[in-house]
View 1: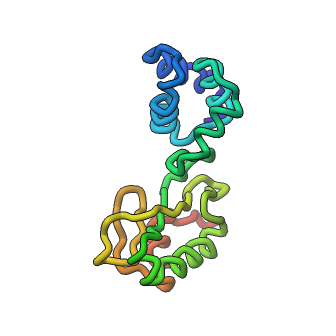
View 2 (view 1 turned 180 degrees about the horizontal axis):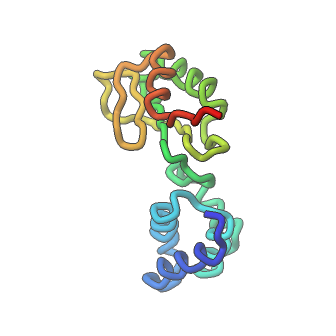
Length: 161
């Protein structure tokens, strides 16, 4: 979301549905994130002004809840389940393999914005542990060795020069 005018336009469309009261803050943050994919700094500043709160207070609320993100998600959003079953079954090793293969850390996005990597508390597929979710598709019984194979299926072939 690099286009400042487009961002402002989208924010105005969202904010027009609200009264500007503090009790609406979380609903506004959720809607902005759903629409933009993340909460850019410019949006947080505009929201703070709209609900008559300091930017620090709005940022404090947004950072309190782990469902809000402050960086864009990649075209392929990868989430690693770290619930108890997945953790015990090797979820941390799968996460490390993904970090190595993608050359990013949890919460980051690749420079080409193709992949983002996040951890989630529980997917609810404990019998299939460990699992990762790519976009909305669950990949069961993951291992560090399967990571490269799964990612290869997502990467577009590079043109030869």
